[in-house]
Length: 330
Image (tube, rainbow, N blue to C red; front, side, top):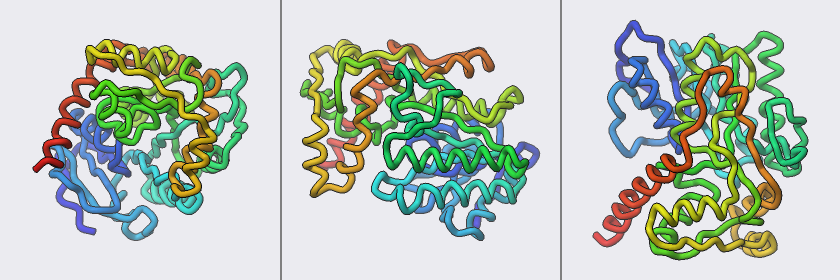
């Protein structure tokens, strides 16, 4: 691996691992602050890097390649997330490799995490001090990865801060559980969108630009001294209500269709990915509410409003899926 020259030389180097839904917007925000930024992914990049960002291809599980990618880093952002079907094989090895690499580089580590480790939280509300009680295999893996990171911090082996977000929506969130690639072509055409569980249970959804902004805050703000923060979210709403907001922005109805877990499990007999999704549908069967008060109190800002987030997401979706349709037709 031979990275291109980073500049300006005097600025601290921030290395973003993972170029999926969150890595690129995190890198772009860091570069906009005048920092040196490397964006690292295992495979080739499809497009040129944005201004101020250097693209580096490296396998995080190759110690030598990771060491080269992290050389000189002041802060490392862990935004790597394997496919559900690869979690048993890769989730813990990736977490351990990135933690070890950041420690060797002497860099701070900022980790993007989710809420799976809380399982059925009391009252459906998740705070930073909510007991870790996973009710799924993937939740157990997430809990173990986080525990190892926090134990390394407690020993003084690693400077790490974890930021936890809920299910994504927003520009670029093509892999989102509900508001992703399967939802938007249907919604744009006025067809029903699919919901796991009960569409009338309140659910927190994290707006991708807010998550990116918050991760940058955790990596650059001296007030980020705690090991764990829940990242900003707008007030939880029933998924059906979010559909109604999207319908109003589109100017036509977008019905909500509940997909029963038994149907997903049946489809999972032939689709390993659908089988993994079925395990997580408990999150939509009861209130699933992320409490972000600690972040807001510490840093003095919260989430984008639903109105603004939906407007920006609908504008992105119209443009993104129109381009995709044009490419298919060409």
